Amino acid sequence: MRTWWQGTWLVATRSMNEQYRSRAFKLVTGLLLLVSIGAVTVPQMLGDDDTTYTLATVGDAPAELAAILGSAEAAGDFTVEFEAQDDRAAVRGSVQDGDATAGLAGDTLFTSEQADGTFPVLVAQAVMTIETSSRLAEAGLSPDEVARVQSVRPPEQVPVGRVDDEERAEVGFAVGIILYLALTFAGNVIATTVAMEKSTRISEVLLAVLRPSQALVGTVLAVGLVTLTQLLVLAAPLAVAAQVTDAVGLPAVASGDLALAFVWFVLGFALYAFLFAGSAALVDKITEASSAVVPVMTVLIVAYVLAVTVVTNDPGSPLSVVTSIFPFSAPVAMPSRWASGEVPVYQLLLAMALTTGTALLLVRLAAAMYSRALLITGRRAKLREVVGRTEPRGLTGA
Image (tube, rainbow, N blue to C red):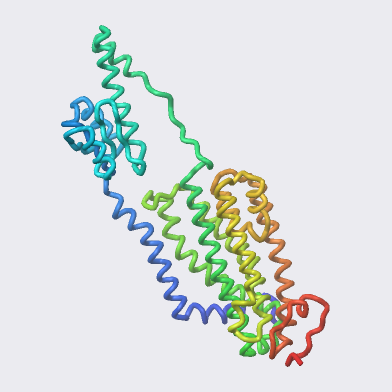
């Protein structure tokens, strides 16, 4: 006699074999692998180009200014090019047209609103250094004394952002988007599969030898493992690159965030998959599956919007905390908030516990909906008939 898990695994392996052998799975997985490899290799191919700044000046650039900027090139890993113009108006026009990054005309420094602000600041500091040296020499200081005055270093600059690590936060934001897309895609696959099995009476054959929970969990488990395989194909090259190279611009800690993302996919999938499956069991035709899951999709979309608009902008706000812990929004919100570095471990564990508990409750609810909805054919079942005490009106809906 088979155990519950053995019967469930039989359903799962049957569905997985069909999906793994399908042309759609091979095509989508191949595209995901190409995208992931491209994200690693393309930046390496394009990363050899040095940053180049252009300084426009009236006539040739002063030798002292060129020397100071030349010394900064090696330390800053950039190249400075000089552009000589006839007068002040020409310098301004060169910057305005985008031909020069900055323009120096007398005591005026022209900068572009779209340009990186680092280079104009460097030019301004160089001009100040030259002018300071000249005035100190005029005041009677010797070259050694001037050098000692210029050796004073500015205070150490410590960048402070909204989060501890901006690059890591960007990774968390991307993870949230990918999880949302994965949950949406997997949920629709489950809904289509459940609706197809009901409309073709395959589910009735399965229920002749299996419990409703076995048939439902087996189907959901199969789709989840297939989707997880595709996520692994997408993330593996990126995770390896994050550890061994900076080719993709990911901080090393991002690989840990990627691993945590898989945990959240499992939890989020377990939560939403049974909602999709239970909703799809209500339909009588496979073409009705998309409309049946609209309420579930609405909840998922609202959770995603909150993650993008609230959690990303202010990870420490009370609404962000609630959004990242609430079970139906935690799978897409907590990865983004966790990557901000502002989440206590207890909040992460609490969100996982609540999501897990809710998913277990939904398994029982969806199994009950699934078993009762199969008794109603010839029409679309009503929600109150499969979750309440109202008895179904028979197999034909009469």
